[in-house]
Amino acid sequence: MDTMPEFDVAGIGLNATDTLILVDKFPAYAGKGLYADEIVSPGGQVATAMVACARLGLRASYTGVVGDDERGRIQIESLRASGLNIDGVVVRKGCPNQSAFIVVDRSTGERTVFWRHPECLRMEAGELRADVITSARLLHIDGYDTALAARAAAIARGAGIPVTADVDTIYHGFERVLANVDYLIASSEFPERWTGEADPFKALELIQKDYGMRVAAMTLGSWGALARCHGRFFYAPAYVVDCVDTTGAGDVFHGAFCYAVLQGMAIGEALEFSNAMAALNCTALGARGGIATLSEIRQFMARPGRRGKPEFQRRTRTF
Image (cartoon, rainbow, N blue to C red; front, side):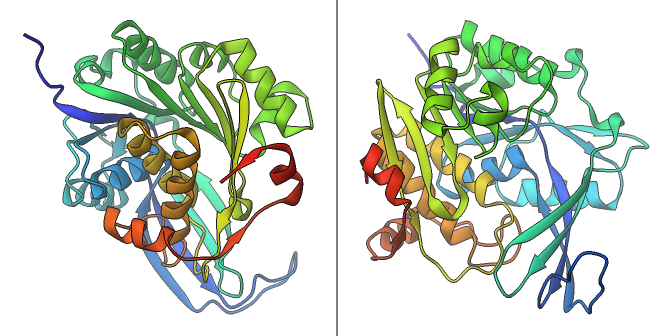
């Protein structure tokens, strides 16, 4: 008799410990100005997505490499406190954790990121435990360590486990990852950079046809999200909020989308739900500052107030 998988979702990829620098207004190039506050806050693409999954009630695990410095300790404590299983985490001795200095413009909530990922944080092939993938119902990855992501996605495909992927830039050899991705949710820049096609609709269609994934999608920041599924395009305008900090919004979107896939939501509903969770995260400081519960998201989604691109609304089925 089949047994229930141990985890709903397994995440393999980046974590980071951020220092937020709050300024009243970002200065002009080569200028200078006062900053209002400095806050240390855990983040990172996949790690934050898994924290969002756990907040939604999913059984989630995180696998990645964490440094053994103070920033690494902060990250480990945050992951553990969020209820994640971290048995697959490797603590790298003598290696600083990934760091980011994020300047948050308090007049808009937009952020500018300066980051560093030491080479010693790379996970070796032999350090990846296949059982953290095969014991889950869904795998979520990013693209930074392409060899690791490719191996993880291949293991998942071999076990019949769907794969969601978060990619924000071009990585050498990433086609090996895309070959085993079921749900691609890229940044707004990735489709054009990958295909050379400026029209986002045509770019997503090219990617989906080349790799055969179920969903090829892109996040659009304050404009929402666009996806191609079942040969059609779906567009979900963004929710309007009083934005405090956009840090981590995309990562939280991915966590919400993982939940939506596992709940069997239709693509339009999945985009709406993920937009809402991402928007709520922007109402507080830090990559994980505004991660909402399921009831908070549902209540928020009942409110009016959206911002969409008229062109996208004309060309798609809009929700």
